[in-house]
Length: 320
Image (tube, rainbow, N blue to C red):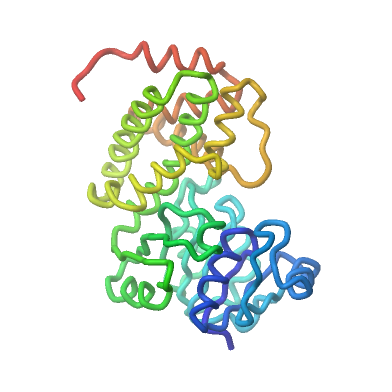
């Protein structure tokens, strides 16, 4: 039996498996199907997502969820999580299930730990989030993330089990804050990309990031999060990274949108569905989320980039 099971052999899941296996752990990397698992076994690298990075000997690619380890990392897209867990829940009883995805489930409005709790009631849910790119983790570059669980002892146990030489984990029991920081920063990253793509300049991006963090914090505090969490790795840290690098799919999507190319993209852009979910929640609660509402309208093509910027700039003057 493996020490750790990673469900999802995309870039991030593979990078986590590589980092953990370098510590001498046995890691099962569960691919989407047997064809992908065979490809990983034969090539001993994820040639499609992390080319040139060999899989350590301790990584065992498989397509089977059977024999899952006591600690399982769920590195599947947020919008696929509920359906995925429904299919494999029989193999996950009484496991520690760590969500490694960021977003809000569009169908239910829930974060990943709530989705886990519903699908696998005997399991212990947790979430791993923060400023990180898969390519950096796989390359062994220093990265710091936050691990959150409702119980302090569970958070500490996972912190020690999943930290590696290059991957430093900080723990918290503020699950809500970590989930919402990781989810909402993707929305702001799209807006930041639009700002640069439309030629509005880096000063405008800095202002948008600052007001975006205020928006994230306001929303998260109203749902029970703690302010210090939003000022930490899973809030401010993740926001800075994804709003300033083209490695971020959300930022790259916004950049293309701002440049007028329609925002065409490959891969998962969680900020699109998160913006829609947050805008709907804000509308229901009459909550002020101007950036998120603008992004939701923009990606739905209800407004243009120019109209979005005009709406934000025309807001009444107020105290900071």
